[in-house]
Amino acid sequence: MSAPSPRRWTALALIATAQFIVIMDTSIIGVALPRIQEDLGFSQENLSWVFNAYVVAFGGLLLLGGRLSDLFGARKLFGAGWLILLAGSLVAGIAPEVWVELTGRAVQGVGAALIAPSALTLLMMLFGHDPKELTKALALYGAAAPAGGTAGVFLGGVITEYLSWPWVFYINIPIALVALFATRPLMPAGQSQRGSIDILGALTVTAGLGAAVYAIVRAPEVGWGSAQTWGVLAAAIALLVAFLAIQARRREPLMRLSIFRTPNLAAANLTQLLLGGAWIPMWFFLNLYLQQVLGYSAFPSGAALVPMTVLIMLGMIVLAPRAINRFGPKAVTVAGLGLLAVGMGWLSLISPEGSFAVDVLPASLVAALGMSLAFIPSLGTAISSARPEEGGLASGIVNTSYQVGSALGLAAMTAVAAANGAAQLGNLPALTDGFSSAFVGAAGIAVAGALIAALTLRSRGAAPAEAADTAETTAATRG
Image 1 (cartoon, rainbow, N blue to C red):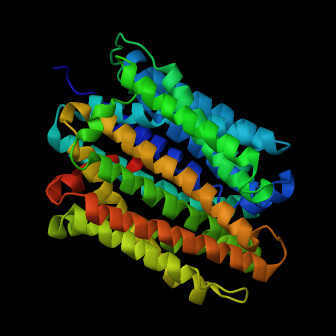
Image 2 (cartoon, rainbow, N blue to C red; image 1 turned 120 degrees about the vertical axis):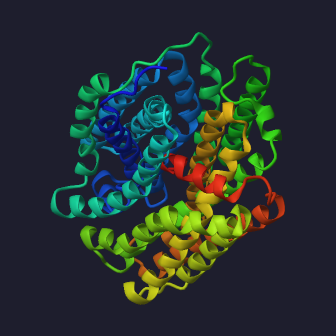
């Protein structure tokens, strides 16, 4: 066994920074959305694509990123991911119109899909020699995710208010440059492997997800019964079926389908998909309610969401592991999804003359507590259910499930909000009705998740302590 790297803790700082940035890039745009909409001419229905373009590329290519990391070496993929993220951030910041902005966001997602799996591989290479050091390193790595989410919300408000919205993308550039210069001297070279790359599988799953999101977002505008809507949905289904067929036939697929026969793995992944489908719409429309209805500017809007994101961070690091040890992962998952549904149901009571203290703060804290409790045990169950040698594959699948659920859930709730008045900018009662409908719909998704978790998760699928430890290990890769 080779001697541990003397620079491993400095390398860990860079690895944790990578996870911090990947998560921050999902949340930092929230407060800036109204300014982006105004400057670039996004319609209310299509505004969600500023988020979805990143998430579809990220979620759709995560499995490919993990495979490329195995084949070409984690250090090379880590550096390549930073370079691509830098390019995407520059394009998104200078974008003069809608299609350029969405292209930049998609390129950012591609970079994130290379960074996330290679970062975890590098961490294991640096700290795998010592279980105690590995546990400490993984805890710090895991804490980077909620920290990135919290910082993204607050920084988005500060940057949008006092600089301009392009800087929510430009902030990645100096960080990426430092990471590129530091990667080679800090990170182990690792070994490349021989094998094939399932490019066709990666393309079909990403195109299928993108088509499904596009059809759902466009449906309120062109009509749910239109040939365009059903044609695009049919194409999405065909592409996703083709992906499954490709995975079943390939000797070295991106995703071995038989892994879903593992007890609890499929159930935990479905739970994560519905959790993403419920949580992301709530966060998205709460940002819009604060700015477009209550009239908050960018900085107060970002600051208003800090209590919620801080509670998520504390819940994931402190509360969830203790609750799992006492009650088990299944009970905590179901309770968390139930609390999330209650919080979003409470948010649906918003009014055009509402206030932050009454209409937003208490309900958002209930929802945030539910999110933090549900996320950790369902993620831990999905990872710990797989065989140890398939932990990387299980991690890639569950993170893909969460990202896919986020994109599809936001697309569906955007359609619901638009159909109930959210497309009428300036009409505060109509906007409020639309946002309220989205909260109700997202609460319904959370209820469905709680019921499915209660019916399908097996109580003995993962030991409570094991689920808590494993969840802490991988929490930074959520989206």
